[in-house]
Length: 127
Image 1 (cartoon, helix red, strand yellow):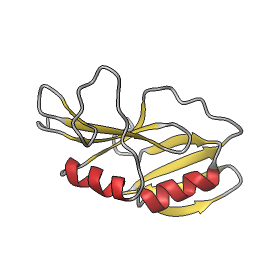
Image 2 (cartoon, one colour; image 1 turned 90 degrees about the vertical axis):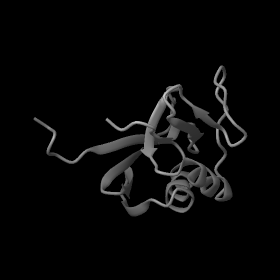
Image 3 (cartoon, helix red, strand yellow; image 1 turned 180 degrees about the horizontal axis):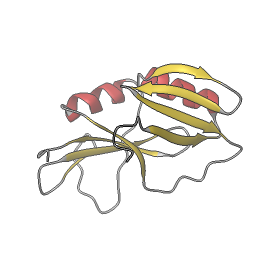
Image 4 (tube, helix red, strand yellow; image 1 turned 30 degrees about the vertical axis):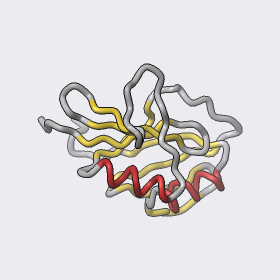
């Protein structure tokens, strides 16, 4: 039913100026505009609307993720841009903060200015 329609992703921010800088300058997303309620970005054809709010209560779970072909390079690029990779309790991560799943998929986590958890993943086996 919805498979042929474009997906729009949503997040919330209580720090719109910091979020704009983070998503545009550090992550490299295309800033499309802003209105009284949202910051609007393009991520490779997917619209990301970040709603402005008085407060944000991150869930502690991944909110957004990007699939990459070279996770080590992407982590290095983000680290050089000032993004700090997260360390997750109970998960064995390498020196870059990358966890390798039993199937070979590699994942790294980081947070935006509001504490929303974001991921990069390089999938070993694409179905």
